[in-house]
Image 1 (cartoon, rainbow, N blue to C red):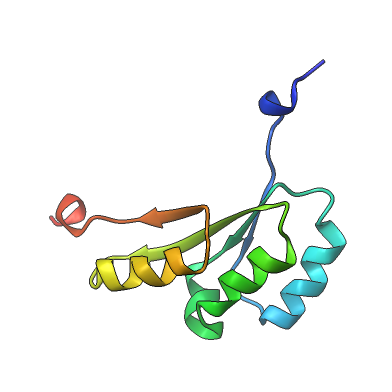
Image 2: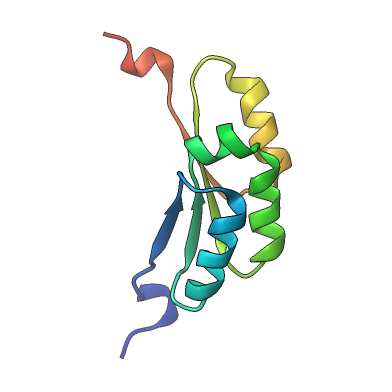
Length: 98
């Protein structure tokens, strides 16, 4: 009835647990999710290499890095791109300044 492109995607956002606990959780849900989000809190507490770990472990899933880049945009964007992430969130300071 639905083509693969029109199917709804389920995104799992990972923020507050250790990477070790999250890997157990993801492996239980891996067949039900389409997108794995590595959140800002997890990246800051566990390091950007966790993005690479998720990408290498779950090669057939889209990896989204919610890496709120605001101050050191070029430097932080390079870290994200080097991890091989497909999607990332970018905030432009000039657009949000009051």
